[in-house]
Amino acid sequence: MIPEFTYIRAKSLRDALPHMAGDGARIHAGGTDLLGCMRDNIFGVKSVVSISGLNDLKGIRKTAEGLRIGALVTLTEIAESPDINKFYPALTQGAGSAASPQLRNQGTLGGNLCQKPRCWYYRGEFHCLRKGGDRCFAVEGENHYHCILGGQGCYIAHPSDTAPALIAYGAVIHIEGLKGKRSIPIESFFVLPAQDVTRETVVEPGEIVTEILLQPPAQDLKSSHRKVRARRSWDFAIAGVALALQLKGDIVRAPVLYRPERPLCPGGQKKPRTS
Image 1 (cartoon, helix red, strand yellow):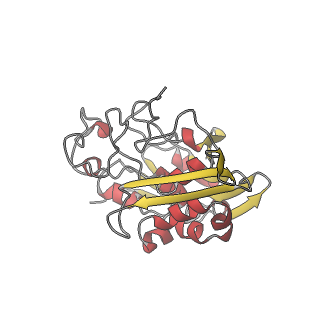
Image 2 (cartoon, helix red, strand yellow):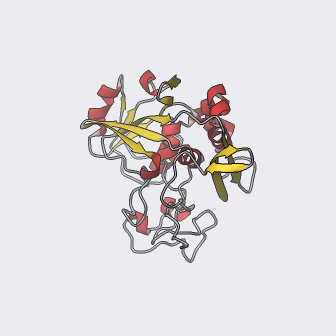
Image 3 (tube, rainbow, N blue to C red):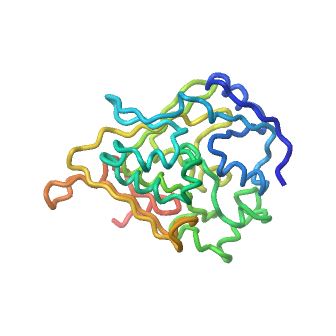
């Protein structure tokens, strides 16, 4: 059952931010994850602040800095964008593989990056580690969609189909709150279980993801995204990978635009060094 809450339709980002700072405030954009979390009692909700009508958070724009994608751009818009398909095909493929056509029409890029884990124990009536308990039930239970590397206590894998491509492209996420604006490299956007098992991202209460910036691609950049799932649609990935390579003929000049110290494994952890 969905709890009672106050609904606020923000007229502008400046109008939304004070409401988001309130206790128990939650953002409504596409709403595809929010309604499920409210129904499953994943978090307490006192007020829902709708930003779905904010035009400043919509649109895909080419600038001197690169391609700017508003947080309210839908997954369908990303999958069908000629500019994204031409220069960032892995992101097109990732967005186009998410969920079903109906959910892609409604779901936004910001929501896809900020969604809650899909672990059935976390979403069910289990007082797991991520909800303040003392154990991860997936370790000895049903863990079909959980990570096989890393984990550090909690073994959820983030369900976003756009995040792998954005990491490969070295994207930057812009966040705004009452204390001002900040820009976060996407590889630093997600919070590891070892840092805080109760959180998924660095977004603080009262903050809103406003846009995602993609750097101008190199002319010899090749990229792709692959998702393996049990069914064609309506399913989360059993495994997923995105890559971006700079090539000179058959020679790989650079692995990706952004080169982390160590690559991320499916569970969001950095792989141990092999040397």
